[in-house]
Length: 312
Image (cartoon, rainbow, N blue to C red):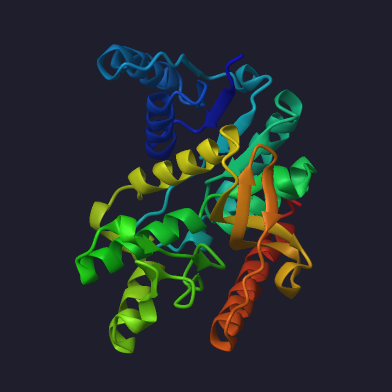
């Protein structure tokens, strides 16, 4: 029996995610949006693309969230995108209300699903979804670390003039300016990146990685990144549905890991059929551990706003 994947929010990220999922043939797709006709139009267009690319994925577009009934995985992309000059945290007031309502519907119609959060501010929205859904923590996660690590890898490949396939990278912490690109666990052909680049050059690449989302928003002027975020979601879905047991950085709820409690954090996890099957605790050098703790403080501050807004 085919798996069912629901993508809630059919904007740039949601539509592109549906496209990439269809091409991977990981399961049938339900694309949901409140804009009348829009998800139906995108779904039909994707169905027309099937004969060209050779996929037999069934894609349904709908304005009725009840159509996610029984979904195995639910991807939440709904919410307003960033505009030039905005931080991800600026979106919290609007998107928290949207994400709470969507999460309540996920609980109602797909109570056994694994939930992947994409809406920003990513850390706070993942925390909100975990608290509202009351799902086990292995079934609620946020897409951020894979995207941020991909950006780090891309910038390093551009600088070192090597294939991105040669680079393994881990970006931990928040999906924001306090994210922590690890110098220790980022390697090029197995060699630690800190041994291949001068400190000032590596620090500049790390800063660009931290601000990469804003750089794209400023260039686009309307909307935000969607190709790489969508690809990151698909990597997560693939790891889960194919039970790959893949080690990937994802935003997850912590209960003691890395000395943190009652918050979410971008950390290395094993993704498989049960969702987050394990949070892997890397031994971080003092500077990276300190940076991770500062990132945790920033995340907790943003999450506390959810209580102020009375969505929790």
